[in-house]
Image (cartoon, rainbow, N blue to C red):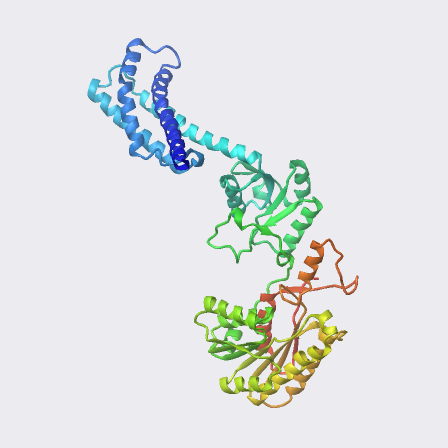
Length: 513
């Protein structure tokens, strides 16, 4: 029954459309004759000739409708291709009508100017009805949508506005743009005005009763993003943003790509120009071992190293499930990587030694560590065993196997340690510095602070506490926290590994607090 009802509905719509298009033919034909005589009375002989020729005009024009596919388009989505089809059908129709009438009566009593006037009127009637219907549908839908202010009147903003207007599944009404480019002020994009600069967001939100602000600036700096978000907070309005330029593919932007403003968007520092030549020279075609490879930092380190095409990549972790997930990821993302996965505890000196002796490793990145400060305070023995003894086992095995370079990934909590985690990491640093005095292995230490997205970061905790209505627990009310992203941290680790000659402690610049 539903199928039959659907067919009937489609048939009814087709009949209405065809009836409209046929009806406008005599209107355009007679209207052209009327315009020819300046909207005054048409001479009787001319009127009779025009009326007698009407059946022929109808026949030819309907055939041209069919020939040029006038009914392939849907009125709801009328666009430029539909207008082009109308122009082709009308143009061909006028040509064949003129030829036919010339054949039958040599165009006696039919003014030549009637043909361009007919073409103009028919195009207006056919195209106008379609575009008016589309506008009516869009306008009705948009009036019920959430009121949107778009930040950025560039290509991304234009694509976003177009997606809102055309996508029926979305419930948004784009009201205006704001943009700091002086040349864009006062312009309109898809009929949507550019009303001011970014600093006018609070006034426009109040004036236009905006429900949500959408940021279409995928290349915006973190400082600019912070300014925009602060203005949205001042206006007490929601905001969403498009992905970064690195995440956008093929220049396609639509409403589905919008997401909440993340901490990474607001976390800004000047981009660091890494010496990828030196990094590649150190790791490409070499044998690399990464401990703690299934952790957040370790896993990203594995990905970065895999992209540099080492001869062999050994990944060690004692977490079976996370190691398995990483293996599945590598099979999909790095199918040609010579990576092997080993379920080994770093305190198992014999197993570590066997791996190093067998594989002749060139560089070790020691990322395995316990790092949850409150938990480790009551688990001192485990913290000492994993962070301190584990480092000793791997470092000792590295020296025995004469591994050229050992990179210890440490923490800023090792500076004047006030907890067991910091103390164990400081102990590991001291051991590596002392071990560097011996011939063979060069020991390098890299320190950094909070990393967004890492399993030991305070950020997930803060988010949960905010979602639960607070309070947020901090170490001290005056404490200043610094953050960097996981890719930033791992890339700087790789850079530090090329700079170190042995015995150094590199401290990563954490940027602005």
